[in-house]
Length: 180
Image (cartoon, helix red, strand yellow):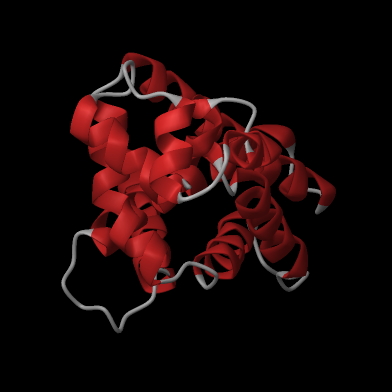
């Protein structure tokens, strides 16, 4: 249903796309659509709870000696390793759909806040002080976004997402150090 919705949002615009059209394109009934989503906006946050859980789980499972950013890197690896070819293919189309709609940009921003909250909570549970936990989580969200964008725009179908998100986090860490 996500692919059908995103394709329709791109083809005819978010505002004029109806749930009935999404359901028809996906080959399901309206009631099936509403079993999975409360409305068409929720299609964009499909999987957010799972992604938040995977990020937090990776942070929780990082070695006790790991600093905040190493723990975030573990979270990025854990979540990124669950992303497959469909996620890669959907990236540019999803980006185009979000860019074309103010409502979808707002929903996307809320998604990122939720991801940061999940990582912050996991870092706080590890004993990371609050300001450092928030900063590391925000860097993690930015690294995920940057890594996912690069990954979904590359031609190499054999490389998973994890190297891209971890490299993006390393770049952000270096940029932070350069701020000095």
